[in-house]
Length: 437
Image 1 (tube, rainbow, N blue to C red):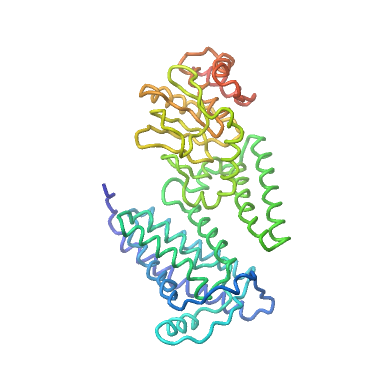
Image 2 (image 1 turned 90 degrees about the vertical axis):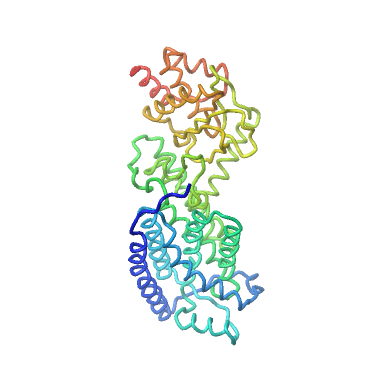
């Protein structure tokens, strides 16, 4: 069923366009003008880019992003979605202009004269656009934001596939029109994902639940990830070339450090259906790949969940190839997506890896375990199925009276899954739940 649109959105969209449109032309043009007068503007070009073809016809998809920019304001169905979309576009403008001024780059290819319609479109473009606003590509940054908006609302076939194809063509066109060098594309995509992460279409904003961590271990882990980010950044910018790809892991690990220090598990933007937002996937992809590989390496000898009691199973987070052997899932993993079928009931209580969940989260998870297990076999999982999920099962055993205290609950779980790891911090929280029972 299509959600009902809130009234007054067209007027609100027009007002946003009246603000963003002039701001775009003024700030973009100003950055071009200021950079044109500088003598320290360099370039970053890979040797293989000399073979990049010039396809004049791709100026059509290149220009089309202006039309899609305006049409995107017809799609939101609520004021919140409208405002967050506009704020993402505004953030893109601010971030990219700041980068253009701080680290300006110049496009180095000389485009040959062109005639006809395509030549006229290039002439119009060059009357406004100069070869200085390069990395991150504002074109690509805006494309990521617009692509996410159209993908949310354009569901019918074949229009959805046509939309994806056209958006991809816009992305390619920044190279085939000789407007950007390659480095501008991945940096622009990351900037776009960052804007979407700042202003997600649903759920709370990243900083709404932000507070400084009070658990010392979170600060130690934040420091470790921050050092990893600095190492990757140092290699990327110190060695250059292909090493520049390490800037992506640097950003990813830096954001993970921010999650541990301030934002908590909500920074990973895991949704109620088990998926991460597209922005979180784009930004955290290097870390997510490492976390997933780590979960599989630690559990390759014990891939299947173990039944603790009464139809409650404990195991690692299921992947896309895992059989749907359980009617319900209670998920404690904050950083990895969980594959859930339409037939499975699902509850997620995101918690940070290597950190003991607090008593409120464990109590809520335990309540859901007791409710959902009555529907059939229930899987309680986290990345490995050894710590966060084990503490949730222990909380369930204590709260429901199946075990008298934390020690008995741990012994019961360990009989079924010997590899569980419950540190003193976990036991302390479980003892608090036992005292509140």
